[in-house]
Image (cartoon, rainbow, N blue to C red; front, side):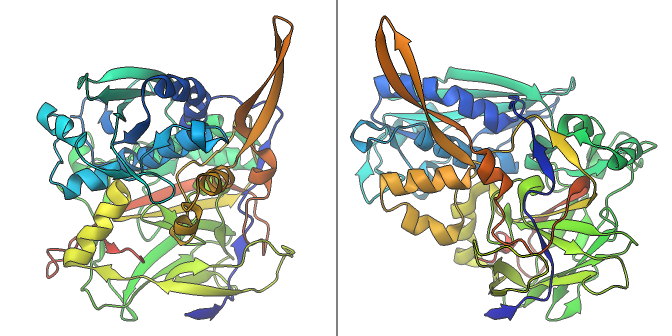
Amino acid sequence: MKLRLGLLVALALAGLALTGTARADRLDYRLNKKMPEIVKELKAKYRNVGVLRFRVQDGTAKESFTAPICGNLIDRVETLLIVNNGKDESRALGVIHDACKVASRRGISQWYKDVSGRRKMFDLDYPLAWGNKMVKADAFLTGKVTVSKDGKTTLVLECFDKTNLSLRTLATMSIDTDRFVLRDLGYSLSSTRGGKSLLTAKRTLPEQDKRVYRLLPKRRQPGGDNPPPNGVDQVRPDNIGGVSIKMLVDGTEATDAIREAATEGDGAKWQLKSPSEKAKISFLLQNTTDKKRAVVFRVNERNVINEQADEAETAAKFVLMPKGEKNSEVKITGFLKLPEGGDNESDKSVKGEVLPFKVLVGDAAAKAKEDMGARAGWLEVVVFEEGQTDTDYTLVAPKGLPPSKEKQARSTYLGLRSALLRSSKLKTVTEIVKRDGVTIKRELIDVDREAIAGSADVKLVKFEGKHLQTLKVKVVPGERNPTNGGGGGGD
């Protein structure tokens, strides 16, 4: 479907100003810094490795494999293994793609608690992340994310192999729990009133994150129905930082579609009841304030603009003008494919294509859920108000490639590595060192600041923004649609 876009799309940078020295506060940044030694250790022992789903423990809750981070860490670890793997394919570690999917199709789903299940996984054939070669696995990586009450998030990267089926630790890293971790856990977020007062002055992301509050389902809120504490505004579909979202089914508003979670789900406070299979669905975003708002809308953990995997802070955004003005609302009927590159002139209309949202049921839903893992069935609306942010750490995004680019990129090792470097906002750097009178060159993977500063595929207007609120919604089966595995996947 072709579409002449009459909407405003913001510069993907979202006003982030990078200073000269990166600080290793982000989980992805820490993981990338650890990866060269991890790859070196793996190469010394194994030829081919796969990555399995991670587990999460949030506070005193039981371990779980259902949060979005459990699945997207597979993409992030696979990506960082490949980009830190060197240019020479003949010396590269074999990185398996979609090991979980292969194991699941062969009936192995209880590998974590069942040692016999782990053993069986080494009998299967798996696809390499590039080319058409099938290989046996020599080892698998997995791990655990622990979010503690003291405001720290710890990632333990683990490994097991055929000769030792017990999990052993490869690396451990700890960061301050930030908005990115909380979003990956499936929480809706709200800036406190003290945080909103910071909109008038430049503040770093860590400073802002100290004033971000996560909103829990009723069953996990202290006292059940207690409202958030003073200074924290509730996040609701009709008011996400001054923006409302409505789902339209066959052109009519589905008034009860997005509802507050009661007993279902994990971290998600809000749920979307999936419509029937043949329904035509769209979403209407409306600015209800007298100020500009910028919105990132993600379906299945992918931005509806060019399927970007970037964090919301660095992703392309819809800019909504004040209520009553032109472009104060936008109707989203599917994933928008907009032209990349170009002259990036402000206030310029562009032609784009739309891949309509689809409701999947039965086998199609099961396959989509298998392909996307823990990403499946999540909607996210992130709202920003105008204001400048300084950051002395960087927002790399190693969450894989847009589906539209993935097949071609995976045809060759170097092609995939180059594509992953670009999409992750990383680059190769050659370091020259002298040891015992010998000059040695080695390749390092570092943050590509220019790529981050110019990462927008479309720049129609500029918008420098600060986070206000995030609405996280989990899609659940509709009453007449019990086999639905994810709703409007748009795949």
